[in-house]
Image (cartoon, rainbow, N blue to C red; front, top):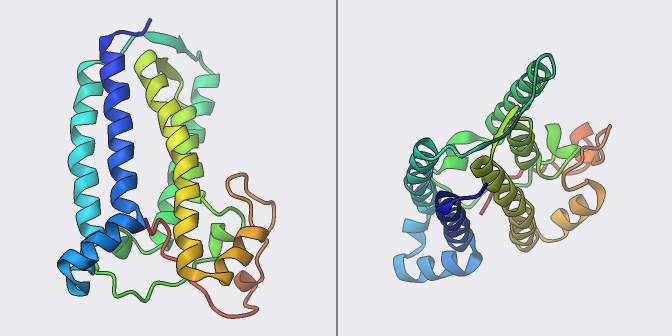
Amino acid sequence: MFTISTLILALYLVGFAALHSLLASLWAKGRARRALGDGAMRWYRLFFTLVAVATLLPLLRLFYLNPGEVLYSVPAPWRWGMVAGQGIAALAFAKTFLAAGPLQFLGIRPDDGGSKLIVRGLYCRTRNPLFLFALLVLWLTPIMTDNLLVLYLIATVYFILGSVHEERILAEKFGAAYLEYRDEVPRFIPSPRCRYPETAGQGPNRDRLDGDR
């Protein structure tokens, strides 16, 4: 079932995740700040985004050349229900991404160090809505191949570990404000109601630059 192409894809995915996490780490950012200065660090996130895109393109080509053996294909009408679920999750992802400030998120607008903790919108129900919706888009795929399965499994592990890594950074950056938020709002499974009072206009107004990694 699994071939040499599956192994190559798996190794590339692990390398991609390792590089992505390394560049997002406080250690790498600290080294870059000492080497380049605070002025250049305003553009670190743009550099991070460009590296992510550049390393993602070969991965897409690998999947294009080696789609893998089909493991299952969900028949209609269940297939269309899964596709509809993917569409809803993709729209929710886009809405959340736009609400988080896409220009600063991607680094196109330089980081001036003034980002705040976002607790409004879907962030009052789940701490990681972008990861959640991305996982729904992946796992609702109606046609599964062996290479896609490897991708989705590694991506799931990466998103879980990435959320832990990201939350450590946010806790260090925002301190007690983030710890309070973390204690009230679930990591992935959304709460049926907002769990954090700031979203209702109570307390200080806090915004978060999500994915500050």
